[in-house]
Image (cartoon, rainbow, N blue to C red; front, side):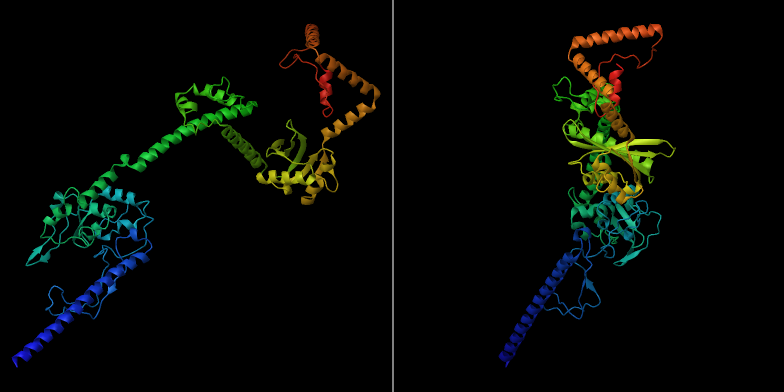
Length: 539
């Protein structure tokens, strides 16, 4: 009978042991579920590195988890209406929020540690500014507060204000009656997740009977707290910060660049005003004459040590502002400024369009565009706004080129009230000429044949039809050819002209003055400019 009872007892023990093993495995399975929940919660967050707490919590209800270390112990009280926070942060400091603080007033930051949001909730661009503001503000040390007592064991304990003197990093929250660490709060995110598990960073420290916990928190030289403190000290050394050094260096380079640009603008303005060429035949370093642009720049830099130290060979090789491309860009900038002033002077007012085309030395067809308008003071002005290379002289090509120039200057065909061209068929044609195409766009753009061109055509036609005038200018052309072919004949002509001027001055027939009685030579008459005939006759 005893053996049967013993056998039954053994079977009961074996079944109990198996039941305990099942419970242990179930407990391990629950722990795995909790960890997996924290892992997937991290994956679903928008920016897991920017927050020190997890929003997702797993409620466990109507279950009993017995102690694993004591299999014979009775099941514990069921866990109801509670939640197990994420493993990455067992006790959050503030309510979970993924919202970022982008608009922050550094002069109105929360002073109580319990009211402060996580440092990672601030935008990364202003996070250092927030840290620096808190360090300048100092730790929240309320010394005159009536610290409440808390029963710990069989005695009442409270926060001691003298601890502020022993630990300069110590902060006290009146709202939660807890102590915090300022350094670990500000720079804890830079040290990893370890700081989130410290009571001085997360939920706050309120075990007032354990003062040694303060020294334990400080730890050794390489402790989490001391590393955070070191980073705060580095942050306060603003003059040694990388961004400050880079900003200072950038400002110095900007000042040097502005000095080079300023003197380059002076040189370009001088050459443009006087109509002198920029480039030279040989602009190498060993050349004796590197062109007017560089030579004038070399002359100006001798007057100032600052300019001398920031130009030519003293400037970076990739930023000397002397390349042909840079020179053209500077000239283009001046051209844009001139066009802007013309455009502002015209505004929404009307103007007349003057166009003429001719081939240059390189045998390229060029079209010049001039605007004639009345300014705000009532003065009539004619302003050249551009010269355009055209592939052919057809009316449609010319119209498209004119349209591009006007559009680039924020003008339009609707503002045109007059057209002035020569008498070529592609310009004044009644059906397909440039005049007709523009009239189709704007019927108020009246065409006027250029008076100077009309006079030229009339004078040349009359001179060719009159035998005496034609023979006279033919003889003049032969004289010019004979005299200009020999230097001796030119010298004789100049000597006779000088003697004639002297006699005229002595007799009072000629007057003296600037630009009068200059030494000249014979000028060949041109077929397209009747004024050249007058210059030939007045030598």
